[in-house]
Image (tube, rainbow, N blue to C red; front, side, top):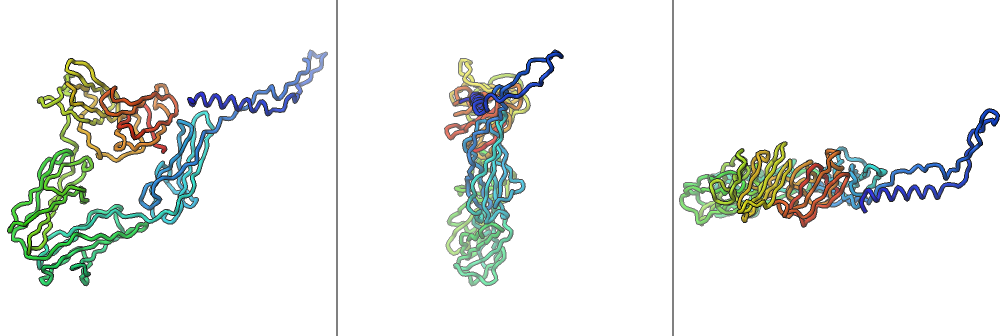
Length: 491
């Protein structure tokens, strides 16, 4: 039932109920005036004839639940359940019944202060025309200690007698309160070897060295990790530091130059890093930058093996921060079409993103006969997919620069701006979203779900919003667009 119809039916039902419950024919005397003075005939009014005072009906409301791991450092979320469409919420999180200062959002990440306590969340729902309702969730289990995300350390340097090795520890999340080191020879602790460096001894030749790091943080379990082993052996006469070459932009390929070693190792192994953390699967001499590398610094290590020689691990210098993709194009102000393909003025068929300005960004796709295949107009972040079958495309200057879209360049959010396009599961988390209505009260806002950002044919469904509304962003949709409404996730 439409919200307006549901509200009207409830109001009528409430009025009828109040009328039926009223005591009939209870007289209320009017003032009696003397007839010789021109008085009126006394009258009476029954209570049933008086207008009933009808309160706003209460919102349909469910008891919220808390979903997600109940653990220090892990985000828990409030699941509202079924409420009247368009209900807006305020949140308050509690630990053992006490309100948590500042914990007033849809999601909450427990800290050490909530360790061993139980969480609840209260939702205060409101919507114009309805009486506000509050609901509080049940208690969770006790908040457990968190897990520190700490990758394995690596041994940097040359494992040869007289040389000094260094334990390289990738950054941990969260940053630990303390770090300790323990060096071992063939698995046995080396007495006094508890610093981040270790000098090799001649009697260790032919044996293996490892280092373990233990990180500690209040509210978290201690984490101990051990490096790969380095074999102690003869020294290389040349063991240069690797060098990274290539364009430092998302989508470009970097190459490591290992340099000239003497004698030549039997084999090399590589590992690429983004901001000091190993990139999964990036173990070749070349690496193509991903969206998740955006604004990060890249390094690479080269590790060697040769029988009788000590293990050597050299780390490159860090690159500058990775920039956005080099695949880009923009309107040149001549109001012309751009061919799709390899022409010098052509554009690559792929999905693009633009941070449109305050003006209306407009784009269109064209067939070989000049027919329009799809178009879009709007403000805010824009998405645009050019298909390989397109003959040409056009856009206006308000769109700015179109840059090839790569997943992972931004952190997923639970809210939108008033205007913009979003990739679901990347820019925007899926789920139920609510809006208080159009930002401009006199103008309805619109929204759409997309299977692809290539115009009208990519639209799965759309709607117009004139009042508070709740919708679902499902797994079956790829993208979402809003024009005139800001949306907030509630489930």
